[in-house]
Amino acid sequence: MMTLVRSGMLRFFSPSLSHPHTFSFSSSSLSIPNPPTPSLPNPLSRSISTHASFQTQLFIPPGIQPDEVDDSAVLPGSNIAVGPYAGDSRIKEVEFVKSSSRAKDCPRDDRPEFAVLGRSNVGKSSLINSLVRKREIALTSKKPGKTQLINHFLVNKSWYLVDLPGYGFAKASETAKTDWSSFTKGYFLNRNTLVAVLLLIDASVPPQKIDLDCANWLGRNNIPITFVFTKCDKMKVAKGKRPDENIRDFQELIKQNYKQHPPWIMTSSVTGLGRDELLLHISQLRNYWDQ
Image (cartoon, rainbow, N blue to C red; front, side):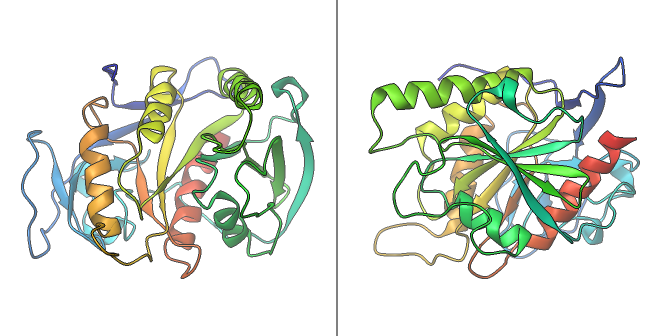
């Protein structure tokens, strides 16, 4: 696997500004829940109080200093601190705008957008439906690869939630895989209004190489990401591991290529775990981008 050097900064480009918005990752001293987990090699790491104990670095948003962060400022089941840019995160209305087969055909009204990406069976459509609390606003299907276009949904008439084609289609032709991958990458590389990619990772299975490869490609191209771990309600089965164990394994692999760990959060479309917290995280990214 190619080694990726990260600066520890997320850069958000606004069409109206000549300089990038910058979000930093940092560490903050928090009380260590019991039982404690082993320390990571990075001496800056601190323990985060979550559903499971993880050693990871905090995501510190603008407007707050690392030494101002305590347990109460960290979203449950995540490494994300809440800062002053967090605002009203309620979704009051959502409307489908268009489907695009090419990045250049996407809406061009300068509204900020968040792209949802993941393997075709990661629960992407279910998460979108859970976020907006409307059934079938995103197309769900037991057949992998159902989303084959870039779909824009306008939220509260102010920002976009973008449903992207999944990757790793087991039943799609090689030609289709290539086409989908090509235009999706074109979207990432040419979309100035893209605030962040919500990269969905299935926490009910061990880390998948294809997810790690996707995360590394996004990182190499300086595309901001938040890891959204799905299916965190799944219980340990047979010889498998619990979701928190799979998440820990994924983080261990990611830190080989990322000097600073991107923001991450645990979710479940079945129980609603992490829904409100993820929307609050989106609100502070969006509000800072909008300034």
